Amino acid sequence: PTAPGSRATTLSARFLGVMPAYSAADDALTTKLVTFYERRGDSAAPSHQATVLLFDPRCGSLRAVLDGSVITAKRTAAVSAIATKLLMPRSAEVLCILGAGVQARSHYEIFMELFPFTEVRGTRRSLLGADRAAVRGLTSRLPKEKLPHACHTTVKRTQPQRKQNGWPSFGRESRGPICAFPRRSGCGIAASSAR
Ligand SMILES: NC(=O)C1=CN([C@@H]2O[C@H](COP(=O)(O)OP(=O)(O)OC[C@H]3O[C@@H](n4cnc5c(N)ncnc54)[C@H](O)[C@@H]3O)[C@@H](O)[C@H]2O)C=CC1
Ligand SMILES: O=C(O)C1=NCCCC1
Image 1 (cartoon, protein in one colour):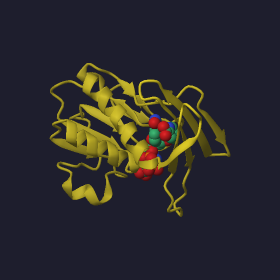
Image 2 (cartoon, rainbow, N blue to C red):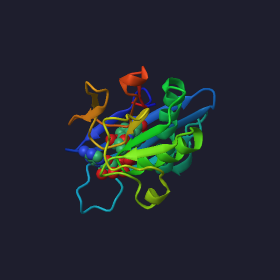
Image 3 (tube, rainbow, N blue to C red):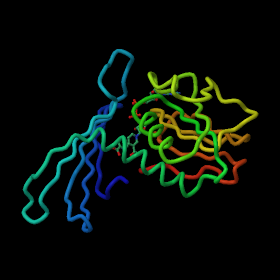
Image 4 (tube, rainbow, N blue to C red):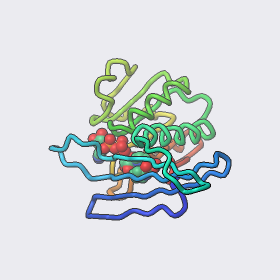
């Protein structure tokens, strides 16, 4: 989760986030620095780039500089997985992932490892490029007649809002990832990872 004291500096759809944290249990003093930029089609750079600095809590000296991109991808998906483990109906078989970027991939990987989904669905803009062939039962749109049991949005700058039929629809503000379980499952919108 975002640490208390985190700050973000904005340059019109370009952000620098500072996420300091101290864990007494691990005796670890750290901060993550993360930039997240709205990308136009012509940019090859990742939309989110992060670095983690680790300090010695006793003397304040810098001890390590870590790449933060993998940590961000895995930690965020891990939080979604915890929420899903606690809230998803046991009978769930169908996973839906909206978005096709870094978080879509990390969510896909951990969800396929931890849960017995038999089917994965995405939207037209999904799913996972090269992994497409490995995804069983992928459909290119969300069929109304058979709702998935868990839905994870990893799209940028959108947020699902519950529709009457229980499906998330996209608003224009805010950010994912957000875990949603359709109302039919009895859970409603269940959790938003992290922030
Ligand atoms: N809560 C947390 O701790 C974290 C949250 N995030 C958030 O998760 C989201 C995804 O991050 P990344 O995967 O790293 O970004 P990314 O830039 O790698 O992927 C974004 C994906 O969303 C898709 N997309 C954008 N608009 C769409 C739309 N209207 N419909 C369908 N797909 C659409 C893009 O095509 C792209 O595949 C961002 O909003 C980001 O800020 C990311 C990291 C940590
Ligand atoms: O690294 C994180 O955690 C982020 N949270 C929200 C937006 C971008 C990065």
